[in-house]
Amino acid sequence: MLRNRDQGKFKPPSDVIATEDKFIILVEIAGMNVEDFKLSLINRQLVISGNRPLAHIDNHASYQQVEIEAGEFRLSYTLQKPVVEDQVTANYQNGLLQVELPYMPKQTVKVVMADIDKKDN
Image 1 (cartoon, rainbow, N blue to C red):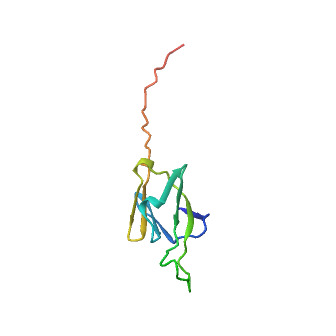
Image 2 (image 1 turned 90 degrees about the vertical axis):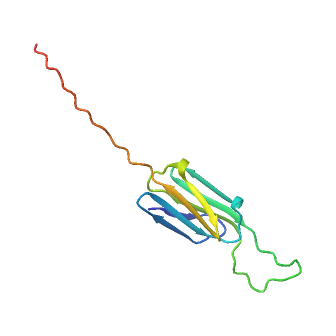
Image 3 (image 1 turned 180 degrees about the vertical axis):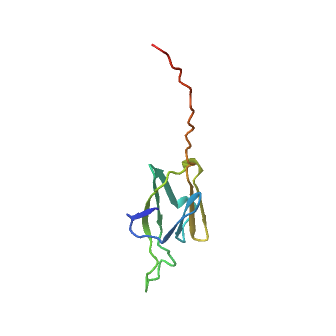
């Protein structure tokens, strides 16, 4: 399970999906460029942040209504499973950021049985 702690000026809506082999995080945030996002992953803590500018239509216009949130945002997720950090991918298309975090493969322990020589005293 992932937890999200909002620490920015506004919180874009997001979905967190756990599949059999990875976490998928979807963040709905239109009006940005790929280079406007910052992602960091340190000690199972994923942070997605950025700054969405206020849309400027005309310098001589006055806003009658403002519902589209703008400014800085910071989403923080605590990963409940370890992930392969160098295989994390992110894709931004049609106003949707998709981050995929593949789980770390389960470690198996091989037990080797050895014969113990008995020595008589």
